[in-house]
Image 1 (cartoon, rainbow, N blue to C red):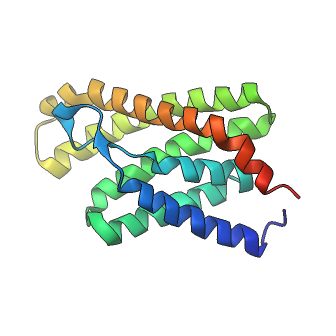
Image 2: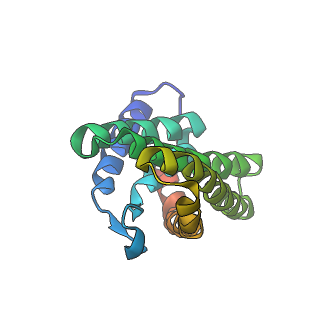
Length: 175
């Protein structure tokens, strides 16, 4: 597929809109920390990244977060954290897959992506939560295992779903 084709641009727009809609399907995995909500919206940026490349995946991620911010959230910190989480999962997964485009490297990419997102979001939450909620770091440290587990679970689910549909969706865009 040509890099600047109308189909690619339209697909990015459609995937962004669908991902925004999927952000509305949110529910907490751990009821004790209901600000951490699972939604399947990161599947579409991941698919866009696999099909068109990492820049397009990040573009879908950015557009869906901006649209969700404008339509519902109004919480710039939450949206920025959502973007950071999605990017820290998506980029390792896609770049590792691009080394050798086979199932083994796809799975390795998912595993590395899950580890990276869990680590990145744990560190970011250590910095952001005390400042944003104005609570002591000691209080924040209590939540870090739950935050790491949440991100590992959320992005593992996204990886499993993506792995089940990626090849079928990618075939649609082959010439």
